[in-house]
Amino acid sequence: MSNSLSATLDAVEQPPDSSTLPADEVRDTPAWAAVVSLTLGVFGLVTAEFLPASLLTPMAADVGVSVGVAGQAVTATAVIAGIAGLAAAIVTRGIDRRIVVWSLTSLLVISSIIAALATDLATLLFARVLLGIGLGAFWSMVAAMAMRLVPPSALPKAMSLIFAGVSVATVSAAPVGAYLGEVLGWRVVFWIVALVGVGVLAVQMAVLPRLPARGAPDVRTLFKLLGRPSIALVLASIVVVISGHFAGFTYVRPFLEQIPRLSVEAISLVLLAFGIGGFLGNLVGGAITARSAKASVIFGALLIVATASALLLAGTLPVVSAVAVGLWGFAFGALPVGFQTWLVRVAPPEEAESAGGLLVAAFQIAIASGAVFGGLLVDGFGTLGVIAYAAGAALIGALAVLALGSRSPERLDGGTVTGAH
Image (cartoon, rainbow, N blue to C red; front, side, top):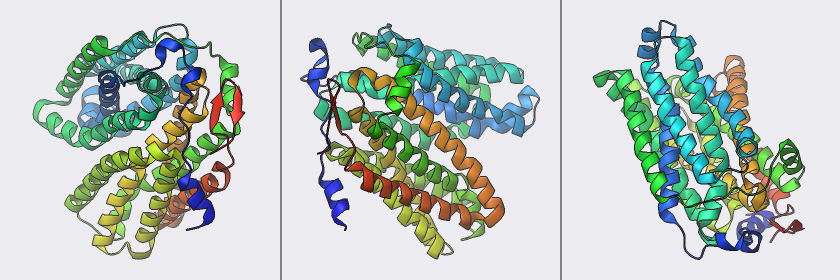
């Protein structure tokens, strides 16, 4: 292991200094019930986001459009989520954050009801736009809220708990949605999600404390944050590493069909292993992040390099492909908690929500660019080409964090930047 790698892994980023928080917000004990309510909110929103993937055929038939056109319901949610993430802190400034969260969870309920009642594409897209607003805005402020609900030392554990909601939704949404859609009909599935949203809203109204808005963010705040080298490094790392991941994973099924030539049943099991791996990786990533958020990012990125390389070198062997894809899920699971915690630690506390909006936008850019570039690579070089790109992008991202991360600012105390530890 190189000296730079050892130095990075041994470095412990300091959590946000509690002296930068208002006196009444410095917590000695974590508000875990409130954190769990955020986890439930994430679970509901992400479940609703992923449902169309498993219900697209009957949805398209009922609203009278092709499957391809109905698929734009997914695109609409992603695009609006990116915009909402950037705008959320600005639009909602001055409003108690618990009221904002209640409103965003209400959008989950309303959008699900409208989707369940939709008889045409326009209505369905409107429902998905509302969901995109709720999803993007919620994501942009969840880390900033977690920072105010727990002591600094408990932030990695809180973020890991919140991302566990994502992992559970990722693993369960598609298979459960497909099964219930087949048994009860796709509209009933959306009614069920609406009921879940009502339950989540009730919990949030019962346990979330008052969280007065902090700061007065505007568009200039976003540009000011982008001008900070530490924040720019986090966002650039997200775009590179996550675009590589989504380029590869978007086309992992064609790879499994063409290279190891797995059956549909075997591919389903491998993808389930990916989801379970992601859940476990989230837990391990949270533990690593408690010591060093950058180390969690480096760990996840280098493990993607290793698993993608295994697919390139020995992917024709079914066992190798199955294990590698499962480990890929494990690697990816460590990345979101690492990235989001790292960003919160380098952003000024009063601008954490705006930084969260930039993170949401960076993820959306990475997802979109990864899928587009991956498609070009698959058409030009086959599935091996896109797996090679995933390995290369993850390696570049890891090396960038190693080379630049040790020199980037790690603390922002009262506007004064201090060096990395």
